[in-house]
Length: 172
Image (tube, rainbow, N blue to C red; front, top):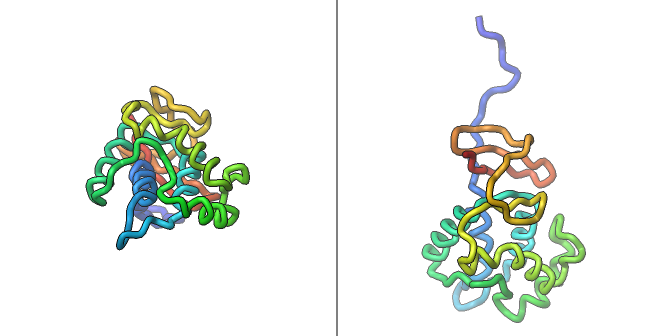
């Protein structure tokens, strides 16, 4: 006789963090009906990913290539403001972006922060390694923290209670 389970099993669908980051980078550059993006929150989301997630340089490049082709846009070589209007629009909304540090409420500071960490991917100067959010630097090998749960041979699940998201991370 099988003991009753406290919890039923369930499936969690996850999007690789590299795909999510690529979507945010490309959405900033995409135009609709000839108008530049006003998705100011995408830059704040990029910063949140940089601050809280580890990700693969190679997978980020692959997903960026996929997203730029799908959207028919050019990948910028540096993270930059898509339009002069962003200076006013971003700064007006920045105080309301959850978790965005106050020192990054200006567009210039946010672009510099994110660009310092991502421009070598965008300019194709880095194709290997891992972004380590704890040390805020690129590293050669990925080491999973103890807070990860193994899902399979190719993915890990990380639950982030403060943000309420789950992300899949590659596992060697």
